[in-house]
Image 1 (cartoon, rainbow, N blue to C red):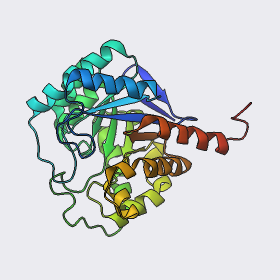
Image 2 (cartoon, helix red, strand yellow):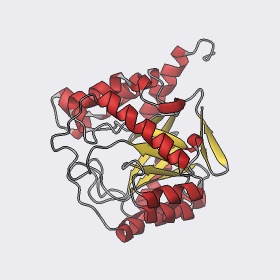
Image 3 (tube, helix red, strand yellow):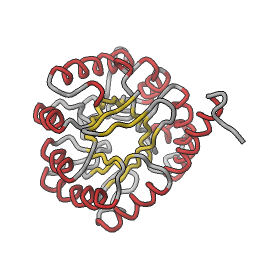
Length: 282
């Protein structure tokens, strides 16, 4: 399995990869305001890279439930300098987390490799930008928008509906010039889903991806973890995230979007060592 972007590709046959979350927003649900300056953002990026992140995902607009939208110009102001600085010193994979075509274009021009769009490329302009750039794309499922998505989300069968959305997106985007091997898919845990929907998707990950394309999973510190623990303390969610990373790797998920790189990467490598006879050696 490979994921392509422009003139490079990411091998996903044996080792799962970590996408480190770099929120350059003042209002992210987990770390809002900590990395709004380029210097602090770069310090955090270097930390995640040193711990083994393959991808750094730069986001300039909070997507927490109830979050207010920001303008494209403001989002670009937050993200482009960070992408430029990161590309200036690192040859790894850089992702821009945005739903806006103009922000994606600015980040791609600055050196980004991936467009991570929580709206699933519903905007024709975003499709055109990604097709023209021949970049890697992550297509996420979300019911509603960040401001409304947790207001009574309803499904007849969330697994069937998310799978159908992925199949539709694969066909539509392929027909509009985005190569299938540039695509990966994210079921959007916590985006327009109740606890029972999230759990149903986590139990059915092997059945979700169309045409054997890779899945990207973003479960790090999500609120459903607090619901299951019976405690809303954000600091208690990191180790349950690690447990879920290990569990979902066993179901074949090869891309994991997390806040804490090192423990999640260790969990992935441990699962892979145990699951592949002959892989580990003294």
